[in-house]
Image 1: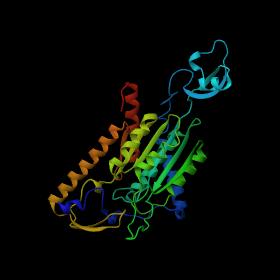
Image 2: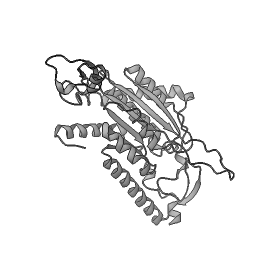
Image 3: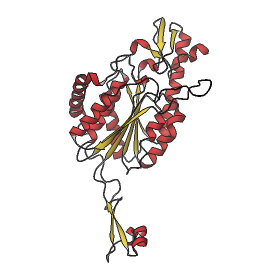
Image 4: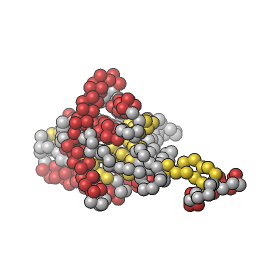
Amino acid sequence: MARAAAVTPADPHPSSGTRTPISPAAAPRSEAVLSRLQLLVTRKLDGLLQGDYAGLLPGPGSEAGESREYRPGDDVRRMDWPVTARTTMPHVRRTVADRELETWLAVDLSASLDFGTGRWLKRDVVVAAAAALAHLTVRGGNRIGAVVGSGADPQAPTGRRGAAPPPGPGRLVRLPARGGRRETQGLLRAIAGTEIRPGRSDLGALVDALNRPPRRRGVAVVISDFLAPPQQWARPLRKLRVRHDVLAIEVVDPRELELPDVGVLPVVDPETGELHEVQTADPRLRRRYADAAAAQRAEIAAQLRGAGAAHLRLRTDTDWLLDMVRFVAAQRHARTRGTTR
């Protein structure tokens, strides 16, 4: 069992699959990738979300606006009692209808995302998913923002024995929500140019960053491989779902689901640097690995479902764009039939 525990899906990954991350020095390549993504999204996904949302609530609006003095005929249910008490004059609170959508992305770029044995790196799929969502939502005055997390806080020895503190939430970069094509391209360039740092960022802190400061109702999208322990991110995700529609995009590589029969395979954990050699010719080890991976993914799906989030799984060895088209079509069909996720 100790041998099987060394190759659980959440820990080591085949070292042969690691590649150089996108960095600011690779800006021309990032621009080319983002341009191709824009063309793909425009051709295959554009229009699928047209008319997919209106005001969040029917009627004149639900978002609080400015207060004004009461006039005969005003709806008394709109009375602004705090302002009325302060001014000793009756005031009503005007409301504003939600005519635009605000989308926030929580993009996890931990070291485990810098890996891929399929057609893409996992981080490439993360950037592609962010690009697709950005181009679908930033229209008609809609705004999109992001919080990007990468790596863990460096450990500094503390105390007389030089003990290192546990990793912190890592580096969190907040990109403000803005509308317009140019601003959206700038946001995507910032995501694609983020340097992946060693260690795993705190996914719970990353998700919780979308709760602070409190925002009006909108769409929150969490893009990650969700390999962090569920107890770290499940509660912040449930809290996020109270106010927003939540979409969780899980990025998976086939080698995280099963091991190939290739003899002795060196595997390395990109977050800790630990190196192991695994004898993949052992069918029992491959079966235990596949069973552990299936149980892990089932637990992730159960936690996302319990949080009330829509769940989309993208793989590095399949057509991610086709998977997104199918998901969007299924969501539209579910809304048309009046069912939930």
